[in-house]
Length: 200
Image 1 (tube, rainbow, N blue to C red):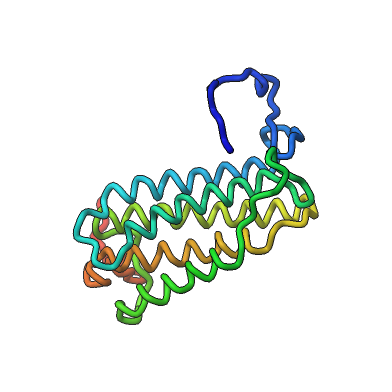
Image 2 (image 1 turned 120 degrees about the horizontal axis):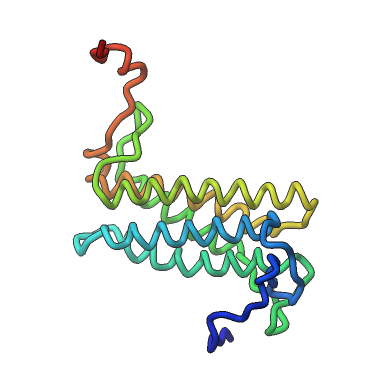
């Protein structure tokens, strides 16, 4: 159980920080970069939730709430190196069921959409734009997790990396659903800028 009765501890003033298993690493370590990017993804999704609104027949708001909770699981997973234990004696790990749930939600939402004939710009409704932003942050988190695995030669939970990969796909599809099921998508027009009037 988490118990936060003091916000500052001064233990990180020298530039290192603690992991769930009690070990400490410098704050610039790739593990903290991955944890931080997951946290930023969560915050970006929280902003997107503010714009979903009450007319949400496809359950995107409920999905996002569940995903935010999963992202805390993902952070806990990354904060406990493989083979380590947290303070409760067992490491919290992302499991295959969490990845499978994302896949089911992607399939359900994607069934509402027409196939794309062009890439879409991260625009449209406020909710969609925020979800596109969250998607790009999530991609950075995925890269950071992959970098952690490569640089440390660490045994990263494969479901953790799969969850981050699948989440960015979910956020893309959800953004399109919130753009009027794709009707308000802003499509990329390749080389459109070549015809733009140039100033002197």
